[in-house]
Image 1 (cartoon, one colour):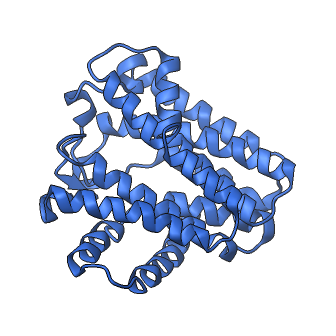
Image 2: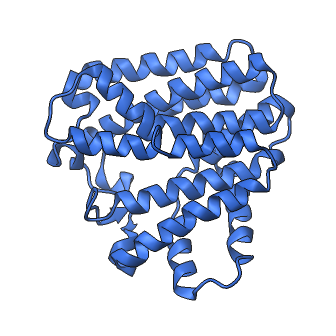
Length: 287
């Protein structure tokens, strides 16, 4: 399948660069680097790095310029998962089919390894030499993005919220990092204003489609395939699309978001074909 090949190729390139960055780190306690490697190389689709690399490739034909951003974003994403899994947050014991970081290394080490990854990300990102990208990723991961979205998620547990509030929650918690992945690759490849606007809209709609699909999988998925427990959102009284609008409408909303993502790519020709296929993959995936 073309998407499987695309993701595998970008994942391999990202993981090779990540390993070089981690191996070059000096002066860190061994156990800290071990905990970092455990979560950073635990598998996964590497969707966000693939988006950064793919956007750069669409714009310029060369994805290499986006490698620092791809690696930094994956470090940030990984640290967020390590912290989300902690007992104080989602209290999850499995991630990608393996015991979560705090189950292996203890809560304190999981917190510190996540903290280290968050700061290492910006060390790596600085190597791209573009302050716009550094600022955009910082904002996407911070109070108005991923971290703020996690707060909204915690505050919404056990409460009824509107569809618009749920959209805002997910636009911050999940969508911001997906959108900035696309934008980072485009910026580093020197996209035109028209290209940047189109890819930004694509990333925004893709982030929404991705989150709705995730909510659906938590209801309909298979634990072995997902690599984590299913039904955890319902057990924690989390606000999700299936809980708010039902499964049938959630599927329709996911399809609409994917269609909007594809429509945003109209300024591009065949070079954006992989992103069009990716929009469908996001809502049709089983893990």
